Length: 356
Image 1: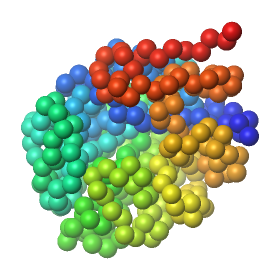
Image 2: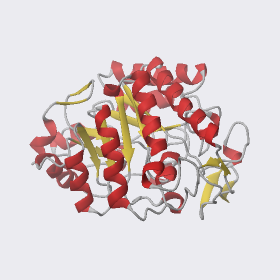
Image 3: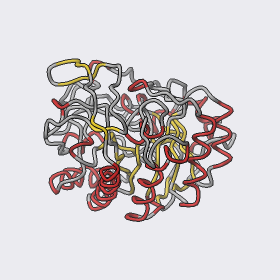
Image 4: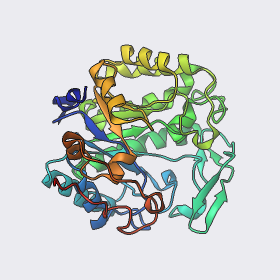
């Protein structure tokens, strides 16, 4: 069964040597200004043997920042920092796409460079706590974006995509999942707008379609992917979707003609919907079944349900995950205390496998 993982494939313009990708994982180790460092470059280069790396969520603007110490890709300093990362990954014969993530209402003024109120489709506060430099804090009520500001935010994604390519990335992934801004527009509770971006299903998918279209126009569809999470398996920001089985097929029908590099699905529990989306999607499908083992995920490739599998925590704890799986070697135990701890601990210090 695992043999299915080792066949080469493509994701649009990106040639992949096999089918085991690294999923995006927030690590909070950039500078306060959002600039990746040599430590970030080392971390990603260690994991370059994955089919490709999807970077941690990277804000396309100052308003897009969510957590502290997350990277940006909208200034020359950000581009220079990310270039260190992409050059290190390419030197190790890897491929990396930068995930563009606007946090929307999942943000706090203490975490952003301008200290402003978060922005969102509607002024509805998420019922959850969020980590800041002073500890867990209640999220504030966000400010509703005006219709003109929505268009400006689409442009922010376009500009950030161009910056990512200028930094040497092989492509970008638009984060349309897990409760962040694009997902907020898709939802039926975070989005209570009455303009052309709210209300009907067609209106709620409009922002996602405009963002993806703008990015694909800027850098090429063959270097553009999107991540979705039907049913919101991480349940970030109390997002609800009352029409999931109608919403996501409609979104994919709107996006399919663009011929994107790939669709990345963070899968919840609705297997019937997953099969429907597979049938609707014409290009590469990357599937992340969080919490399942590698054989279970590999079977999705063997069965044709996925073209590539993405793994998160196993890739975090095992920089040489590909080599370990090929060798049938044991995996490192993740160290949760180091996930967001800063520095090398729990980041670049996981041991690599040595055959006895």
